[in-house]
Length: 519
Image 1 (cartoon, rainbow, N blue to C red):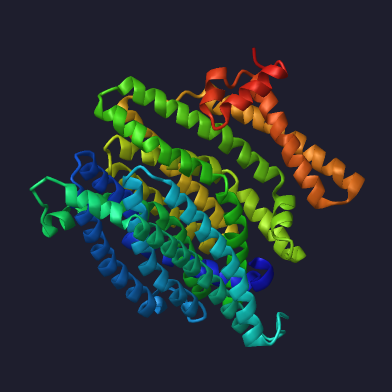
Image 2: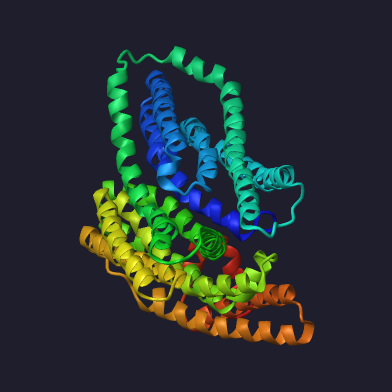
């Protein structure tokens, strides 16, 4: 996408995307989790009629809420972004409406303990998203400009970037629509089975529509507030830099958007990749913590939290070190169309953002832990405090120093660090959990430091021998991972039990024993 639409187009896209995300979070994003929870409770007692009524009620809920949110974003786009970005944000608007319906269907099948449909729909969604994002941007730019060349005049650059960003935004909607068509087809294939169970349902008590709306609202609201406040960080940063800074400094809108595209679309996108593991770990942890809490097993809760925290840090810490040490070759590998200046900026921004990876990973995990413990308000309050601290930091660094976007990177790390500390304290108060330090933080950090030095040395050596940045960085990453694994075992940072608890842990144990690093 970056190769097609450039820094300015990526800047317009990344300026609009956070506002779309926040409206989506508030209106529809938490629907699958909420719906699956409510319907699963009905299915557990074989109330199939009420379960299906909840499904229909949820559809009505998202049609209303999603429709209002889509219209608000479409007609209110000018309230959030500059006029150049308004068409991009409006392109995102219909996706919110479609996503709500998709979320209900996904939640319905998840309630039946069937994740295959959701998984396949997500894969199809991302494939369609990728194809249409690049393809539509390419076609719209060629149609509007007659070719892909970047014009010399500013007006031409803005026009080209706008059409490119609109095409990229179409990809998001195309992906969601593809997933919706798939899930609708799956529902229709199972319709006879569903209605057959309803006909055999002997429960006489039927929930009223009003009680179902209240139940859905009551379940969805805490998830919405927590997720929305937690994700407001990016939206606030976007507003401060793209809307407030131009009024204080003599900087053109084109330059602001281009630099924001490099920061948010390149450096921040890369730094977010390791957080996917933390998010997956957090999602998997939530049911276990909730179940152990309901059973009153505080010792089990503390053990589960400790294991999840350690596993997350074993991956997040070396990721942060690796991104810092290999920032330049990594950005060069992924964003090969960068100019020299853009590559320098992306490298510096990624290095500045690298420490936030560790803090975001742990705070994301602990937010889910608190929800599993029934402390639904704690993550919301903590995120609000962290957001206030971040905003003050960002404004002060932007307006009173010359750090520019490095100030936003620092504020981003401050936000994640504040969230991490507040969530950690809340977990300790809730369940008496005290974080183990040596094997969770110290040994992984030491092993990651050695790994970083080895990866850098391998990269520089291969550059001298081959002059191929792509080959050098790929080999450096692979060898760096091997060095980290070896050092972790030599320093006794993990036990056989820890390894077996990780994804594909039995393979890790097998390799460690064959190399005699583990006995």
